[in-house]
Length: 296
Image (cartoon, rainbow, N blue to C red; front, side, top):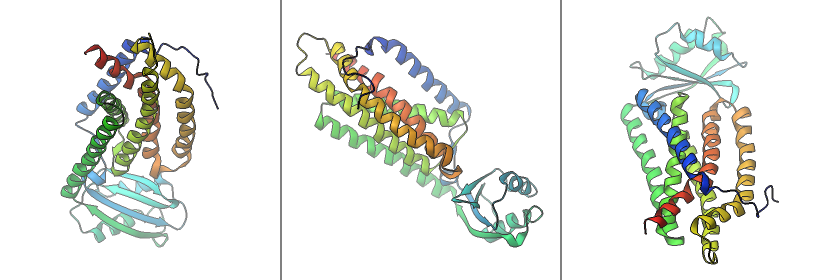
């Protein structure tokens, strides 16, 4: 199925200055937001804190729960549904009190809003700052190992310049998505790390499809320049790129709008990542091949 004919002649490489400027500005705005806010907003997985899961007899109003928690001093908290509408997950800053005491304190604070007998404490867990720090380091290492594996594979399967170009595109995608999280003040958790790894894989898949066509066309380009060959290759794979991204976006949008609060940030990361990954596979990755060739 083709939504765009393979004989189109869009001049993608002719838009290099514009796309580089747009990408640079978006990344700078995102990094500026991270710097001004003092870093990413780490979730309980990385920053440490206490997690309380409650089950109600009937689905509660989250705003009513929020009002009830204001009567006790637990610091900043986040409240969301967990699975069913009757299960509520409360994340609070690290407390010096015993876990059982924290759970009881939360349950008692909601007694004026709900029937205490209708509230069951399912679990109370704490993540210490050292554990959070270790998780941050392991999350960064997982992304680093993924990038190293990508460089080795693409260098073997294609050539070194293709590997470097792919990594530049992946770094671009990750930075734009990180910037979106910082600007919208969303929490960065282990679930989001999983989303970033999925984004890296998805973006890489799109980029490799384009690179494979570029390599194929370079073998038979005749008198065409590298820029002309890259333009032709992107045009030939454009239908496949847009169709794959479009169908994937439909699924991710369904998760984003109907998947519930627990996977909302995960699906948001995928939504931004797929859009940016599609853009980078067309406009960013191939640009470096032109730059590499001009430096020879």
